[in-house]
Image 1 (cartoon, rainbow, N blue to C red):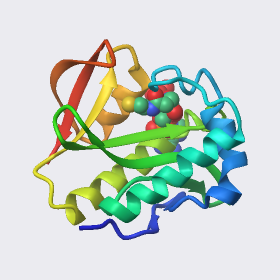
Image 2 (spheres, rainbow, N blue to C red):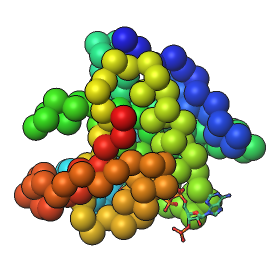
Image 3 (cartoon, helix red, strand yellow):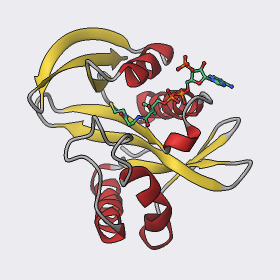
Image 4 (cartoon, rainbow, N blue to C red):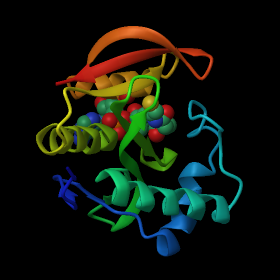
Length: 169
Ligand SMILES: CC(C)(COP(=O)(O)OP(=O)(O)OC[C@H]1O[C@@H](n2cnc3c(N)ncnc32)[C@H](O)[C@@H]1OP(=O)(O)O)[C@@H](O)C(=O)NCCC(=O)NCCS
């Protein structure tokens, strides 16, 4: 059970991270407090913290066949964020996540990346459903989940805050 990479869409390429080369550009994403407002732990402090995270993603991919991957804007060949899967421990479900550099919000890129990633996950991972767990106040993320056809199933408490559990089959 493993997702085949890269995943190509009209404007984007989804590929594994290269921790050495990608840590500096990803600090522009994970180091931005506004981007990380709804992410547990908040903004990362420096490039070493980003490298540790990307190394962890590579380990997860080797262990589970999925992880968070890099999103590249094909026209500019720029790394602009992440998309991919993790295990949501409280339920054991595979959880979809997506994060974009603020400079690349508002172009439909998150929807494009998340939609392709969800389709690959549903086709290639033997999961009954794939979920997204979104802070109730994170309207942009809820809009992405809605646009890619995830259904709002329930409101749960996660990290001490109400979150909407969205699911796709
Ligand atoms: C969640 C997040 C990725 C959403 O980013 P986003 O830019 O709102 O979402 P998209 O990339 O899908 O872009 C959608 C917007 O682009 C617009 N758009 C412009 N050109 C478009 C095009 N060619 N195609 C589709 N949409 C387009 C849409 O109308 C929409 O605008 P609206 O929000 O005003 O309705 C972003 O807010 C983010 O990185 N947040 C921080 C991380 C985070 O919270 N992640 C989720 C954790 S659960």
